[in-house]
Image (tube, rainbow, N blue to C red):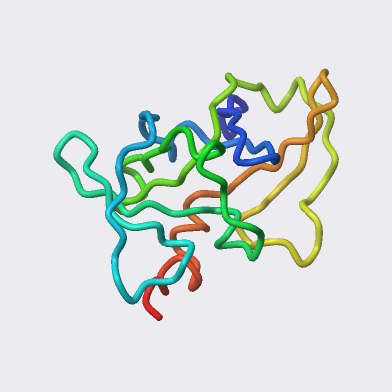
Length: 147
């Protein structure tokens, strides 16, 4: 069975759960060099320990407002299992959650992004949406950075 432990992160005002095997490291938000002729949600390229990482703004990718500078505090670099040099801006990581200890709210809302899988509520009442990072990087939207 799947490992129930997930990394909890806040992106803007929303909270998410990420599979630990898909998430790589989290670093302070680096300087990002814009890339011409790309979609607005592709913020550009950043140097993380000598690797060029494509930086995405997940809310903007899903059709919501872009993260404000104060909300883009950290970069979650995708893990090697995803086979892409990319990462997404996050506001902050706030620990680990065991999905077996959360209230199951069922599938994510219909019409939501295909990489938003399941919703949970923790003991504090925070609603967390489980993100399927392999589905995100395999999506047509993620692969279409050019305009």
